[in-house]
Length: 377
Image 1 (cartoon, rainbow, N blue to C red):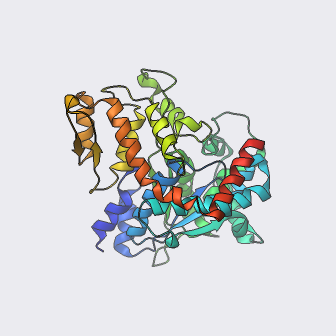
Image 2: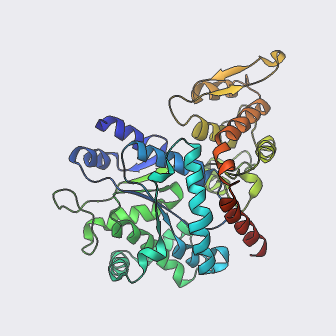
Image 3: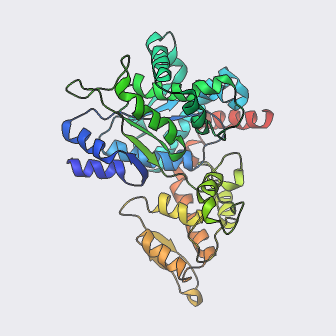
């Protein structure tokens, strides 16, 4: 596979690459491309965690990159998810979460066997060099910078936090260097940690990244798009000075079940949620149905979306690019209800492997355990 094809696969459908020139240099000079993306362990897996993330992971696999999923059980404990119970967190990590990522990759036509899983507590156990890396990262980062980075925990800047939460950013950065990760991958909400990693990279002596000649290098951070939730924005229309704030508020959240679709939702649930989705006629800004169409359905060059509708409303039509779909929606040639129905049916087909995966007795059991925990915690 040539360099241009690999570069295209790694960079497509992303919000930001830090930086494209560094990535191209890696490809041209033969730097080992080692990927990771880390996740806290919490509730059921929605399309943002499952399909959006795994679509990008599939791109990495296709680009011949060594990929891994970091099951961040310590970070989950620090952030008080799942009641802060370490044993429960670990059990859900190696049970439901691992199966959720496998199922999501199946939906996208990739081989789950190519996924490597790393559990945080196993990586850290009796590992002096890892903890020394945490301290070295911290020595090259100010307290003020760490406090500004607290948003990676889903906390607001300036919010009162425990001291343990201040350990979270340097640990996340140390995860990158200790594992030799040259392509750290995350949603755009994790950007602050990735920027710190690039800023301290050339200052580290314990676990630095090096190129083929032994020179210290910075990791290339890949940030994918955050899918919008299906709910109406808190402010509509959205004021121009509130765009970034509203995008953060609107991102898909498992704490608002009707704002998202879970990878194992039933066909009827998917149809119900999409039918109730915010989708104003002719509007593209903060339109979650268009957002999902763009990033989940038209994610590669061969994608298409078929719309079924009565002849009196224009008859059936098939779109072969997102640009065509968006143009007709803006011109109100495509009704929101027809778009919702089409996206729902496409998602139902796309998620069929995940529904089948979680019907298997072993996988069904880990899902039922998580649902029981959600009721009691």
